[in-house]
Amino acid sequence: MELIRGIHNILPSHHGCVLTIGNFDGVHRGHAQVITSLVSKAHHFQLPATVMTFEPQPQERFCGAKAPARLSLLRDKIKLLDKLKIDRLLCINFSAAFANQPAEAFIEELLVKKLGVKYLVVGDDFCFGKSRLGNFDMLVAAGKKFGFTVVSTQSFVVGSSRVSSTAVREQLALGNLEQAKRLLGHPFVLSGKVAHGQKLGRTIGFPTANIALKRTVVPVRGVFAVRLYWNGSDIYDGVANVGVRPTVNGQTCRLEVHLFDFSADIYGKQVEVELITKIRDEQSFASLDALKKQILNDANEARALFSNDAS
Image (cartoon, rainbow, N blue to C red; front, side, top):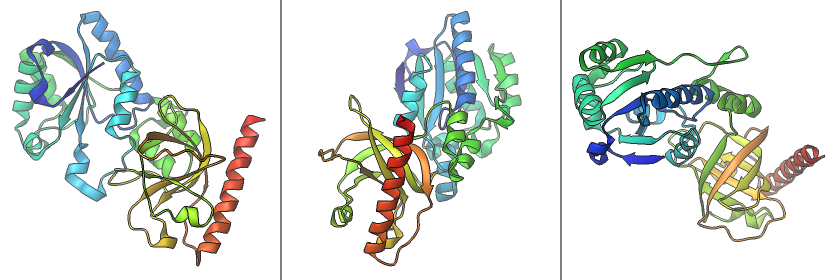
């Protein structure tokens, strides 16, 4: 998969493609179905299967802290999309200038002149351009004018649930990790670089790997049984807290992971933390001793869960 970062890096050799456009947050089973169909069409037309996405996601620019919780960082999204065998990923900086361009310019300058789109798949609620005046009907009319086909994505259902990023967020917020995994088609993972923290965990016998989440809004909160790994590593079991750490007056949402029977130095490593089971909500404790006692209970519960899985 070729990654194209920014419109300025679109080359004349990139002209001619089949294309889908969207946030693809979480790259869930609905996204996978759309992209699998796109790849099939790309083979039919003998053109590259291309995905266009945006960074930051549009609602993050428009709504800030009120935007929906982010399921996947760009790094995670790239990995998941690569597994779907697309040829190119075009990541566009969703700047104020890009958001405010006329809808007609988005179509004629980007889709037609630069990308030479021949087949386009988008949601029928897709809006674009200044004041979000561009819509699906405008794309269909443009397709007739410039010679490309426009089709809408179709809902994909698991059981009685429509698969969407919103549905995944709802299940994660409820702590229903297995249902979220069913909708995603893959485990829910938080990733990031292990950084130095306040090292309070060491003082109470539970050293933790501290991982900055780099999200305006985090989709999960609480204490979880987790598995942690990095490129080429073994898989390590542990217990993690996702939250603001109210007992020690924390201000920002962080991921802290205590790994069982582990003592290696992993500062600076880019790690992935798979959330397996939610143990409880985050809560404030009257003292560090009370917190220590609860963490011991949490760790024992997580160990028991992993022990049961292995038996």
